[in-house]
Structure formats: C-alpha cells, structure tokens
Image (cartoon, rainbow, N blue to C red; front, side, top):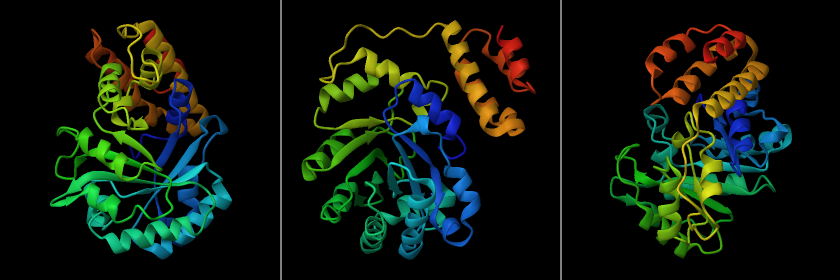
Length: 302
C-alpha cells in the first residue's frame, strides 16, 4: 500500500468503518540517518486513530532508534513490524518477507522494538517463503512480547493472486490464543468477509488493503451486513453511483487539503479505482485523470 495509504485515504477509510489504520511502510534506516522526510510520511490526523506506524528494515539497532523517534515525535497508538512485504525492492534489501526464515534476526528486531516503547507492538507476516512456513515463525517467536500478528494468507511465491490459506491463519490463532490474530488477503466483498468469519470464527479480525482501492466503504459494508458472529443481516447491496460520487469528492477534498497542488496527482489513481466497472468508466476515467483542480473534478462528476 506504499503510495496509497496516506492520511487522506486513512481518514476516508476510518469515516467508512475501518477500526484501525496503518501508515505506509516507513524505513527504519531512513529514520536512523535522516528522519525528517520519513516523519513527514507518517504524520497523521487525529481522526485516523487508532493509528499504527508500520516499520520495515533489517537492522535491529535501526529499529531501536526508529521506535524511540516514532514514539516521541509521532505518538501513534502502536507500532507494526513488517515481515510480510513481498515487493522486490524491499525483498532484495533483505527486509519484509525476506526476514521470515532468519529467525534469530527477526527475534532481535522484535525485541529491539518492544524494549524501546510502551506502545503495543504488532507484526505482519506471510503464509510462508519457499519451504519456510508461517507456523514455524510463530512457534519460534511466540514467547516475545508482541501483542498482535497480521497474517497474509498467501506465500511469497503466491504474490497477490494465489489462494489464501485461511486454515493456516486459524492454526496460528490456536498456537497464540492470548495474542490478537488478524487475517489478510483476498477480502474484496462483504460476502468474502462473511465466509471467512463463519468458517474460521477463532480469527480475531480481518485486514483489508487492496480490497479497499476505490472502495473505502467496504469496511462499513462488512460491519453493516454481518453480526459479530458472522451472520448475514441481508444480502449486501452495491452502492449507487451518486453515493460513490460523494465519497470520491470527500476523498479529493481531503487530499487537496492535506497535499495542496500535489493532491491533483495523488487523487487520480483513486478516482480511476472508484469508477471501475461502471458504464462509461473508460471515458470518465480519461476526463478525471486530466483534471487539474477540485472544481474540475466536481464538474466532471456532475
């Protein structure tokens, strides 16, 4: 979600039902050497709380310093360590998912964060990497004082398109019953969420990332149509385009307020996602991606 989960996007997701928001991944090495630009990346609006800053890197000493800086300067509600990112740039750096098989280093990193803050610490992992399984990672780190784990149910090799292993996520919850276990991957509709909640009631919650592209209201839909037990209230109805247009404008206003002139570049990808699948989307997209101001966006959407 790098380049997507900015303050405006987090605010619009919170407004439409997200319980917790996460920052874009912040480099601990950047915070260690030249923190100012990265601090700008993770700044947030109080409306985003509970807000978690997500860190990545591969040096425990950098994590220790970065944790202190984030706790003092940003004051989020928690810190998340990313052991799950499969992006080539991150993986080649030896960070993200590349760290999962390196248990001793991963343990040092978790302790470096936990020992330098009183904030809750969580971790993000994937189902596995080559022959290394997420269950092995949890078994060998479960004694450490992190409070939650987000498990992306696809392996590194599976990228973002393979089947999600919800059974594995359910097994992890049984291994660490006293920690929060969240499942992530492939949730794009309320029906997806319902199916998981009914079949795997032990999982504590769901993480949604790419599923919210152009659909920040997905959180609200899931909560509206399901009980805590995962029982469907009624068949979920798609939003009419008039309501989506209002959300698009609200999102655009937040981006322009937050980023000024740069906002016109940032909003374009979001606008394209919002209209995907609607009649005339291709023609409308061509107009929206050329819009130079909030006023133009309003006129186009009229």
